[in-house]
Amino acid sequence: MARMILFTRMMGVKSYPFPLLLPSENLGVIVHSLFLDNGAYGFYINGEYPPLDKWARMVLAAARRLAGKARVAKLAVLPDYPLDGEWTIEAAKRLGWLAEELHSLGFTVLAVAHQLRIVGGFMESARRLLELDYVDGVAAPLKLTCARGGRASQSCQLEVARQVAAACREAGCRWLHGLGSLLSRNVVARLAELGYTSIDSTSWTRPVADHCIERCGLPRRRSARTARERECLLNCALEYLGEWLIQPKEIIPCKYDRASQR
Image (cartoon, rainbow, N blue to C red; front, side):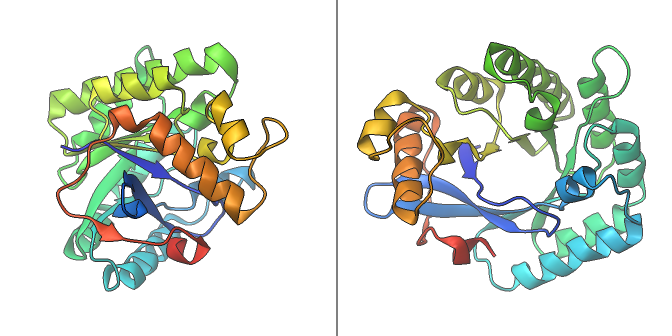
């Protein structure tokens, strides 16, 4: 299975489809798949636990709008609640109907393996989710779990990733995704070794390596502020991490801009 990098730009309550990008010599970037997130972070920062049925129908409505337009592989995430493993598992048990609807629209269905309050909590969470026959794969919550910065964050992300990957190997799951990965070569290389199918990150909007600062004309290590800076930093990140990207057999041209993300 090909390894891919998903670069996202926006965060919020709405369920956005984000393009899964790979480098292309002729096009700059290409779209391989679309990733339909469920908007959980927006509810989390507002301290809300929305009604599950209403939330699920929001995800389904977004999936239906996307299904008729996308000619590429499509991924969708079942509703989850950040840092609450038990709630997420119980919600997944009630959402078989949603998974069936998503499957009928051509989506691969993922569930997020948030930590349970036991030793090996991420692994056990992933195991329980993968016992549901309508869950195709799992996602490891790397960013929210490990938002400490520096080496501590790297070691934390790799431990979470290792536990979730172990459960995926045991169950033979179809897709393994890393949510909010750091873009250091050490982390990305290790995720590739662990068998991650894809990762997402907003870190490309800042220089992932010192040479990107000079190439993109930034005065210092800061986030991109213009479309030109974003495009430059994206291409620099793709080149920097290119060793761990595998081209798909079929590609679809895409201009990378805000319109392609809605």
